[in-house]
Every structure is written in structure tokens, then in C-alpha cells.
Image 1: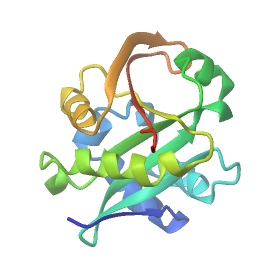
Image 2: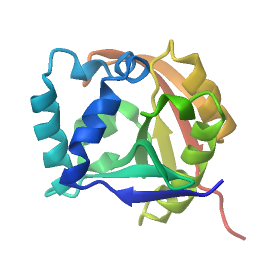
Image 3: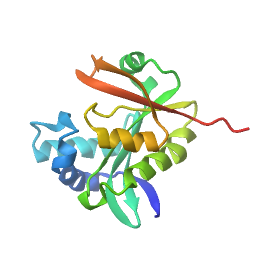
Image 4: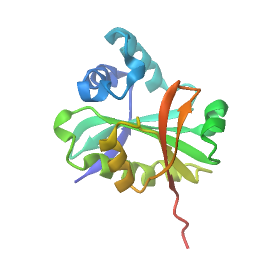
Length: 175
């Protein structure tokens, strides 16, 4: 299976909106509720421009098929969130597979593992990668465990006003 990542562009916004409207994505991306397709397209067009360079978003490409979005955020760029997570030198990952035929096939585990190794842990100063699935999203939790993440703690996020199942994966030391 050939997995690659390409930075999102403003032209990807309509496809990302379509993916976000998939029931299995919408269920876990609660912050899109109440937003129109045009609002989401404008939001993702702005995200693609990445003016502030605080988050880096990619289209997931598997065997030539664009199947979803994956992104990394350097936590120090968001001091309040970094303090809440309380893990130094960390970056956070978020992901969704928008194409339903690519779900439940083990692809998510492979995508997350490769992304963390190739993108996240090549970022200067990043020693730990975090991910925080919804506590009820057991499918995602299992996938992240298979990708090398372990549960750290469960807490209520004041930043997101949501329950958090925080997981982490350490960069392996090279001897």
C-alpha cells in the first residue's frame, strides 16, 4: 500500500467539506455542527493558505486515491492548550478518513504511523506526538494504539469544552 501526504490547497476545500459531511466524520468532528457548506469551505480555504504556520494540513493519498485529511499542530503555538495537555516538546495530530470505502480496513493505523514518523517527528524540537480522540470513538482509539500511541489520561478540556482521551507516542531515540 502506497501512502503519501500532500499539503492541502484552497482547491481542496469542496472535497474536504464533502468529507466532513459524511456521517461517520461529522459524528466525531462536533465543531462543524451548525456551519453551512459555504462557511466550512471558507474556513478550509483559509486553513489551506496557512498564513500563521501554526498548523500543517495534508490530504492523505493511498494508492493514488485521496481519502482524507491529516494535520499536525505544534502545541507551543497554542500556549493555553499546551499548558492543558502538559507534555513538553509535543505536537498534536488530528485525522479523518473521508472516503467511506477506506474505513475499517486498517488504513488509519498505517496512515497515522507513517505520518507521525515522516512528518511529525522530523519537525525540529518535537519529542512527543499527542492525539485526542473522542472517548467513545473506540475504533479510532484501537487504531491509534496499533500505531504506537498509549493512553495518558482522561480529562475535561477547558479549551475545547469537551471530554478528552489523551494519547501519546514518543519519538524513538536513535542509537
